[in-house]
Length: 418
Image (cartoon, rainbow, N blue to C red; front, side):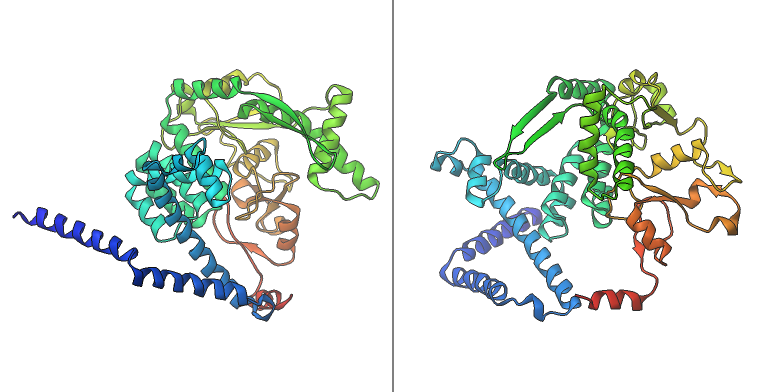
């Protein structure tokens, strides 16, 4: 018997043995014992008795346990669906069956089933899921993009370990956009446009909500027109001594826009970055981008369609090199502001996704350098900018980075506080 055939047969026999043992009486008792131990930990847990470090350690343990359980749940749920178990309860769809059985939503159930099917052809992602290195959300994003571009699988897995889920989604969207042809990208935008809507819903507490859906470019343009009015509401609230949420100011701005028919001020900038090669070719290739800062990829045709809008700033990476412009004054030039807005559509601190009223920050005091350079600057939200003035600092590099405390003693003091 050839060696490979013998090895495959032994592997199948071993797998069958393990699976059979999972369902014999001894293993059932062992499984119940393991579940019982977890139940006991949760039932007897007294968080107030834990130190800060112990709470973090136990949190990490629960996170890993949750990820492993989610991975196993998705894998066996896919098999249950494949064997038509979902039909036995009279549910309308596999997603509805899984949602009812697990107490989640049909959308989340569909995402779990889709991910389980996709990882079958992605060995590295499958291994990361089975070892608890990916959350269900991370696994869904990685598997979705890696299915479109398998060569990007490892890049996505590496990014998942260092980036927030939103940042990982942005990366995945760029990868998928680069893998689409110009025709596919335009067809995608046309489908989204065909499904556009503005809906009103009424809530039990008497409130009403508006929800709009459209292409990235149209929503970006709308928010660009709304932003000056949001700023007006913010300034008005400060003058009146009020402090409310950004969402409240945005609502007031929307009402003001509906009453005035729009703002007579110059609208806020909407930044589209297009690699010059992609602009000439008509579609971006891997490593190139055509996207609206803060909104994600769009087609080159869509970018060209909006080029005549006065409030849209087009940044070509091989055109005017706004990133490396050095200015001798303390204030940033308009070109530098555009470059910073593109580089940092949200706060530069890792994990912070604030996009409103970001403040430009010199990494080194201008009084020491006497120059203003984009590579030596960041955009920070007010909270993180205030921390930086108190001695915190961003770790070296560009893009999203961790904000580090001034001393370890300061961290220990904060960790010990209630």
